Length: 459
Image (tube, rainbow, N blue to C red; front, side, top):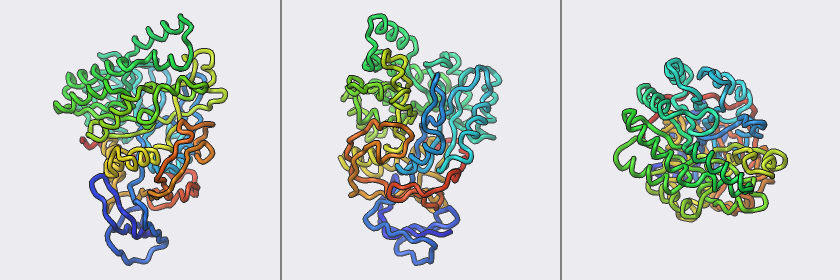
């Protein structure tokens, strides 16, 4: 099948120009002005931005958290992603049984995703214990499973010690992989949660107050230093939420360390005041929402190149029933929120339209840099001859009010209810196949492929 996209404004991380894109057999075959070729499908993109499909490298589909499971599986979650202009995800697998090997969860997640995903996808490894066997299995994970990135946690049940973290960092550097880290100081959280609960301070706002900025900042600084001790191992900080954490990252990058940072729309657009509202349980996730000075610092960090990617940490639970498990104590509320569909339109509108970032930076942080840092580039995250034809058309004049009713996520609320956005995806194409048009999913269940990823491209 062949497709010709004509008259669009093509935007990459580095360039913007008028042109046509000719696609055949899932691949971009030609880019130029006034391409005159017969095609099965011709799309007039006049007045539209033609961008590489969004890549979200932090999602949690099907994940089990205590007594509940995320409400989006690999079908509903990827349909929502596609409708929001995302054409590929890299999902963070949940923990498996105690002492399981590194491929255990890979097998579990293939069963979750195979035959369901509508866009392409990959998995991050999850590290819940470290020993000689686990370190040896990392090589198999990278070379045979196509998973060069693995995540460790400094909090929750399977948190790693500093000694274990050092061993993991050193091994990943040796293999050419990268370590992603959830950075929060576990003992500080434990102390503060106990302190507040003993005083009867159990409202949602105390979720944030029990995880202050210093909890994240200390853990980020510690991991940066451990990565240096491990021979300057590559380090990827997930869901950065604080100014203090960003300052540590700036210092590390300015002295040449391979430290990369990700933030999320919720930390750019929402503040902890949401937790003081009657429906504050909707906004319980970790790290928590912060202050306005933090959101301002994060936008500056993106513009200045200290934050490389914007992902979502999409992990939805129904407000009615599931999130309300925390109505009598914030500590009982499932940790997570939706956002896989809202990311591209929100960042375009709040970032590009409002002048916080340029359109090339928008493409970079939402598509190209995620592709490079996850081992997908240049197959994904770029509009170039030879790349997969993962393409999104954005109508810069289309105005939309975000409401639950227009979204496709399998959850009963959006954190961005009432947000007015300008600029919205009107067509999503994955490997040359149009799967969303005018906010309507027209693709096929199971069309998405698992993508084996290669070693990362350092930025």
